[in-house]
Image 1 (cartoon, helix red, strand yellow):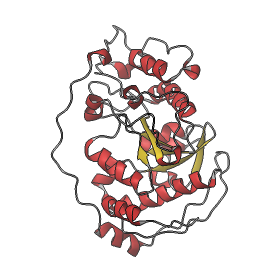
Image 2 (cartoon, helix red, strand yellow; image 1 turned 60 degrees about the vertical axis):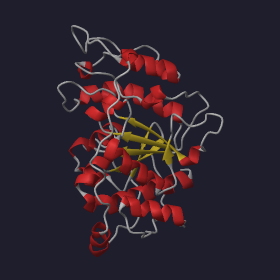
Image 3 (cartoon, one colour; image 1 turned 45 degrees about the horizontal axis):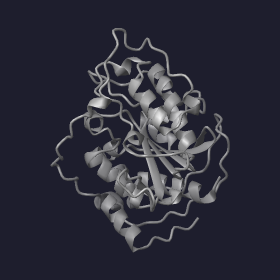
Image 4 (cartoon, one colour; image 1 turned 135 degrees about the horizontal axis):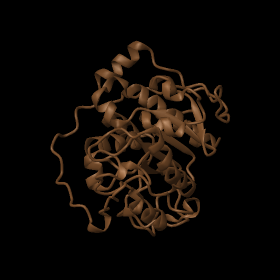
Length: 303
């Protein structure tokens, strides 16, 4: 695959903090994920190249944060006396967007609902129908406090960096305010979500059982979006999407999960770093760019 970047894309790469270098990834067929299923990653930059790219890394995003909007009263959930004992809503696999959103806001099937303000589900803020699709589906780690308040995945500095990363490959997340009569083409659209939708109070990491419970909703999102590639950003996202692909996946160092194309519900999955990690560790932005190139190659090959 050849990446011929135009002026806009080069500008986006500079915003992302990545000097324009274009690896020529080897085009390899994607195979159904098994313990041995893997595709070759694009050529990795040399240590000197990484140092050169890192030296030009993006300046820290503005520290000023916008005022947090109050939570809609309709999204407030009352925790049950015995949270986590309820069963999942029936028929998730057949739900449309509004029904899925309602089921999520009523869900009390795991203990993550304890003390939550509201589930984080971007689709609840947009009028989506069965005809809406996106070629890119971005799955992030569990929501933080700001994401919970905004009811949107990837906000503030993390969201700014994600948007710049997507723009660098000609993609943008769906804007709920955009004109529904002028939809963005699926090839240039990303749907963003998170591996679990609730932030427990007090905040903690989700258990494997909780990840598995919320995966029912994630599977329906994948079926509705019909993406050509899933970008798993962060360890919890990768742990859920690769479950069953790698028997020892939870014990595999995160960095070693990169550079390989797996499958979730038949959709290619590419693992990369979460933007919040990249803000703390800018040296790995060059590797994240290589992951984006691999994901873009998958969408263009249609495999």
